Amino acid sequence: MIPKYILEELAEEDLPHLIEVRDYLDRLISDRKASSYGSAPKAGRCGDRGASVTYRQEWVRCGKECKSCPHGPYWYCYWKEDGKTRTRYIGKVLKEIVL
Image 1 (cartoon, rainbow, N blue to C red):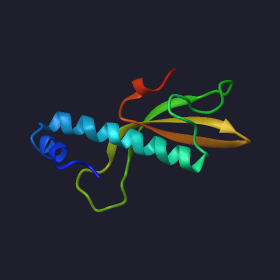
Image 2: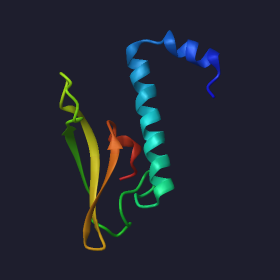
Image 3: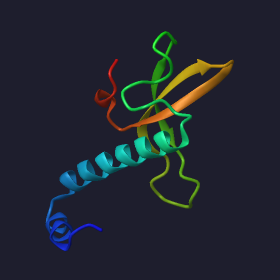
Image 4: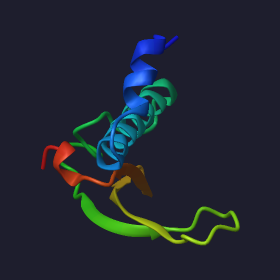
């Protein structure tokens, strides 16, 4: 449970800071999901160290009726593993990945 004082402090922050917090939390959630399912590579890497990895930005449709679609751009990485093309969501900022 998040302490109430932290939520109150966040409520007073400006929009750029809130977006930064949201992006940070999105990366944490993505990394937790990847580690719990075991199929996606850990943060900082995409695919095997010897594998060829492609990084690209993509605009994504959310599937809802929203006026701001498409959303993004978001960074993704692609690599081949066991004859299949794998992908991993990185986020809005690529600098979190060790190239």
